[in-house]
Image (tube, rainbow, N blue to C red):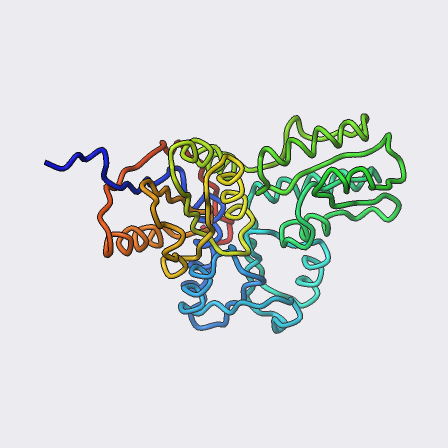
Length: 317
């Protein structure tokens, strides 16, 4: 009789997949498409960073654009989950756009904080990835003409940062950073600028933190961690980084077609998780494909304790 302990395993890591902010953003686009089925519905930027989600919403009729100038005056428009700058908000008003805002409430909280602090002319440091859509939106919430706002992502950038008044600084963080890297940067920031104020730890969202902790736990026993998510998804990239930093091989894949023999060769325990914007059916397809050429025991690991639920805009209720 075969010893089942020697069988290959697929560990499905929880929590994984859609967070409350992503679910809300997708639902907003779908509700708007249904309500205005006879009109064009534009979405500024990818509503969430996952090509499968974007392709499916495009199939349903959503028109994705990268510039607000590409949206006709007066058109129905959805802002993505990553949020937009004050400049974009004002331009939308000038163009008479009928806007439905799908900005994640956690991102919106950071935006409101930056806007509030900018009213005091205090300078702000964002710990995050320059050019990321969320960070661009956060930068654009700063309206002071006499203060300053800066983006840093490494200790070297912090060391080289020149500010106007080191005694009046505030910091925020991108919501999808690596928890450990963010803490390292925050600790260094406090060393370089002892009077900097900010949140007790960071602004990283609950879903990002939960998924990173789950990956750390499974990386101790897995031979490889496959992270399902698109290449432009910050939180998905961080999951793969966390696995590697925990000493486990890890690969970021869009779907099962990205899996190469080298990724899983001689791997007895394959852990699979997904970023906060990756649909669950992608995981199911991977498990199915892996079992075509091999035989795995499939186990769930971890416990999803996420009960967060974000309210839809009043205009859609």
